[in-house]
Length: 114
Length: 114
Image (cartoon, rainbow over all chains, first blue to last red; front, side, top):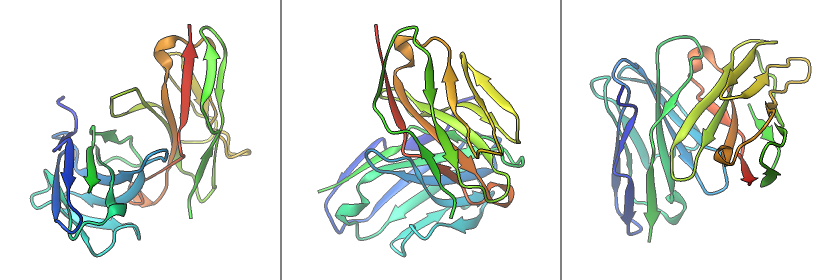
């Protein structure tokens, strides 16, 4: 079990640039989640995939954000025209396709907008 | 919407003290409940869970009981160690098949002094 892997660990970029993060879930997990965590807060849900289908999106996910999971394995989260408020830790989690099962988290990608 | 409220920290205790971290949730349906822990420099790890009323989750000496009547899931440990110093997050999972994602509290920073 290699766990959930996220890349990169850190990303520093200028305001207005586009960024893309990658998440590799645990291999047998078909559910994948993205969360955002700011300092002093708990993670906030962004979006959810079951296999390749994006089934749920939070209102936090503005139209500058897009997520994909093209083959039901790894996922990418892209932020276009980044803003200062996008600075946060972006977390990916995966779980088995069982009712309300536990989610396993990656170490996250920390995004800093200059 | 769904929400989780947990006691604010930091909570500072001496080694071998008794620990309680309070957590309450909004009762829309019958969520699964979780405690996650984040050790310094590490990602979120599942500590324990309970999926229905009166269930008790336990792990590493920590326990929490799902109390439907008080909508609570308080975390307890009889004798804490310095190595328990971390941030603890209470979370609920609602929605059909977990599609809504986890709802987290803000986290409680626990500091154990030798």
